[in-house]
Image (cartoon, rainbow, N blue to C red; front, side):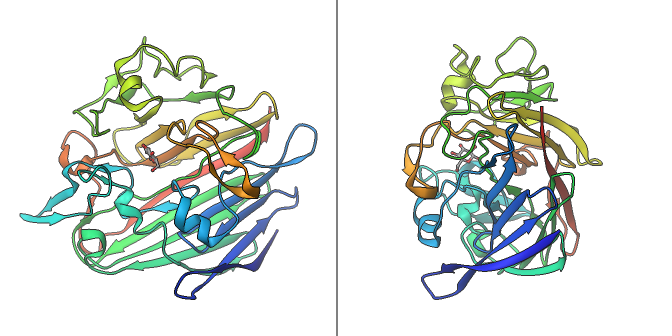
Length: 348
Ligand code: BGC
């Protein structure tokens, strides 16, 4: 195992951004940049032994700042959407940045995703990124300290562990926004990948992608991924929820609350032979099929077309601050948030 570091460029204020590369004995490489604690690349050898970079992303700091749809970024303090872009905690009302359609909050306006983080290398197989969000940043109460530990194992499992604590009661909901394409970032769409997701229910949303309340059974709907099927098989089906969001862009319920690390699904590309198993301690996951990607150029100047990557963003439920029926992610001042998500790579 080894960790190496190189310069990735500079922020507009001249802060240097670094890239850390964790490599294991199989030659699997995870590239993490300190801008947004972002997963920039992940190289894994396909069935022919050819390494493919299975993550969408960019080659420069400028591109991450100007063109990103959160490719690979750490998102916080509250990933996904909050309706009305406001929260109430202990009788106090907090206005957040309404960065989507001027109405809702999406990914906390990128507060964590586009800042420089600090990095240390605690061991030969991991990198720890940390960020201190000042009280009131993006409208959220409390100075919040966050650490994200990326660790690669010899058997090709990338573990992402999150730790957060705030000086005031606040909602904490972190994720990583990797867009995967198991054929490579420049290899067309992901509709032929198969997906299994161990979820009996999903969360219906309105036109603003805000949950309408509660969950619905996946049984008998295009949202049933309990047995693996191609992502493209029913993405165009005549289903109100798919039309609302232009394809899969929904939260799936995994559990009633946080639990021990559990395997929740598997994505497979028959073409490259690469498979990815997903494990998490969190109660939900957003499956987003990259419907809004629109051809912006990414790595090596290659366009990232609609559905050229998919995301499995492990999380608490979207808009949970307004939905008592969903598990709460309100953390008391000083109370510690912890979660772990693992993406494990192998061949079919
Ligand atoms: C959301 C999508 C959004 C994407 C990029 C996902 O988490 O569900 O609707 O387009 O993030 O911001």
